[in-house]
Length: 271
Image 1 (cartoon, helix red, strand yellow):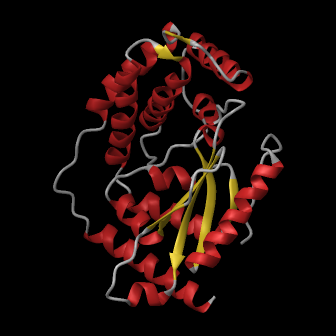
Image 2 (cartoon, rainbow, N blue to C red):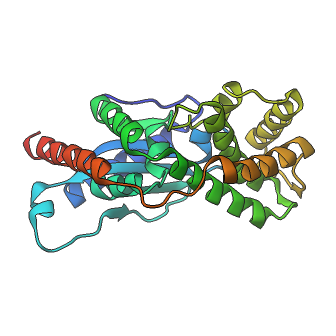
């Protein structure tokens, strides 16, 4: 385990509690945690003073677990404790969802905040994601997620919730401007920097981010006009730019992910 990237802004006591919880999960569930990262607003680059700590991890179970005819759960969930939310997926589940177009594992692989992990594992899994993930399906994941949140916002509501639509919309914009890429950066500030955007939009996003960073309650109201127009326009463009795919041949993707899974179970069994 040679990965560790914790910003100074994170509370060291809380980080210590997460480390303790990850140690407990490994010991009690007899699994090897290959990567544990921060998800949610802290990793996306727009935390509030009272934001939760959303630790997510990918684990590999013992070889006995995979060779048994009796299925076990492929998710480990721990009780919510204060601001701590610590949950993880079995590698097999993560790979199935990756091939199916779910962007969650991709998000985890791109998180700038890492509690622990193996750099070779992350690098190889990132390369695998680039190889097997379907660009249009990943984009449709962002579209579905962001458009749903935008409908729930309904034009006016808690300003915090604007970010739940803004970040997927920005990821869609980044993917449109980088047509050879499958995986978009995770932090909102990087998405802003790497896209060609109107100055008034960038200013509005930075102002809203700054407000969220220093207040627990942002209040309610409509999204700033440049942001609202951007979100609506990006979701509309994405419906044509990233069409629904059907009948995709998954043989190669399944073979590549199966080979990676077998390699990692052997590493765990012999490590």
